[in-house]
Length: 151
Image (cartoon, rainbow, N blue to C red; front, side):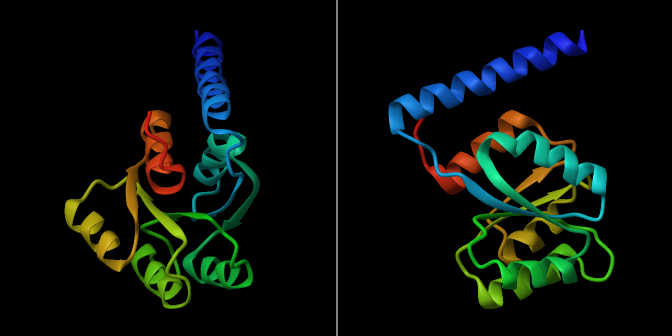
């Protein structure tokens, strides 16, 4: 059953990509940074995004994420876990916004707390997605922030 679901999910993604490529030309390949202390969650997210990117960078905490972001100013999109050791997502976002105002940042967390989400948006995140990540919601959010294609 899981194989059938995965197959249908892939068919849906590739159909959407073929349609978008046909209608709008080649989609920009994104350079993505995932800042998450949960290695498995980061790996899962990178698998979901593999058709949109040629390069995914990983950071296990906010300090490492800030350093990677400074040394890679061409990053298009950052996925920011909220709760991390050394530096949380709010402080990490504020530090990144000090030197990069244009990169898109999506906050992500398994903790659904409206105040925490509001704090992330105020810190400079462009959007929020809850874990476990729903692929359709994720693609719509990326489209809204990056591609801006009306579907």
